[in-house]
Length: 547
Image (cartoon, rainbow, N blue to C red):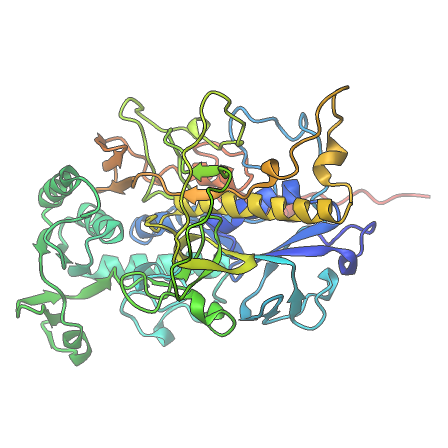
């Protein structure tokens, strides 16, 4: 991204750091870039050069020809989503976004008001690997299962035989990883997929449809697939697996020690389940084991992380998405506080930034981005939202640090891109309110005051109520799962629907729009970056000037 403007030195700017530029972090950065006062900047940090659209990776790791579409350039990450019906850049007032920066780097340490990077950025006022910040959003997600972990070895191959010669965290490395994975799947005569979540289901059905001669087995520890959802989802998925000749084994777990023993027969690995069942497969895909990426919080905020149970490793948060820690004793009852602004995930149609977790109304044959509901928090005078109670067993651990997405223990919200997206909105808007609150207390003119001209005789805004922090409440669980190349099943607001005309690339252009790219279906068939680079190379040289 561009360096800070010459009018404002980077040393004079206050900083909001956002760690992670995926679904939630990018959305938070967008809102902050549009709403921060001129004396503030966003510093968005990600270890990847491009946004990796995780939920198309299983498809692109099996089906050739679409790899480049999974890697979205970050050059428009601070701009509003390019959604149909929104003002075009030419008609909307131009905003100076040049002071906001994206850093391609790893964060190696985190303290209360500073973080350490693995490289310096003197052009952005970071000469010694250390970035000081006033606020921070922690959006580093989780460690991914190996079949979609572009930073790990390809499938079951050893690292030295993979794509280690290509730098990880780059588009080139990611494309090479996917192509290598495709080749490995194509060679396999039999595949065992362990884990019956959306990831495992997609891998099993895609491999079975693309390579019908390959024997595919799906092993799941529970007796139902997707148990958080209606049983009708399980029934439809089982039916599709059967139609694709996938052998489905439920209620049994893989004995991981049988993998390490390395027994083989006729080119196939021999593994066993905990019940003693023997399974032979040339390729084993472990679609389990996702863990929160919260190690950076451990030293400075040790009480924030959940120590045991199904949410182990997640960061506790308040409804405001601020870091939280447990309290020893239940607090005494207090007088009812004023009703805070409540933000529940919208119940309308949501085109999520996640192919796995899209939602759709049954009446919609195809879900277009124009149906996205991104609320602007307009006041509704006809009804008052019900107050959401905070957890009485926690308190704010750091008022200036927020956690969102897979890293956050967010009140039962499923780990999904669309939930991270909405949590990012809550965190960003609360930071903007905290900044405005501090400016008001200091007697400084706020950004809102400078941009608004009050009508004659208008009453002054309530300095308390309009800066009440928003509270997050997750919406009902919703999911969409692909069942082969053209079919999918989804659950939305308790209703189950089926689609049988899904595009092979899973409509990836829709998520490109969320990152500021104005693209239509088909625009990504050729790699836009490669095309742009090619045009730059073949551009005719200017004719020599004669004097």
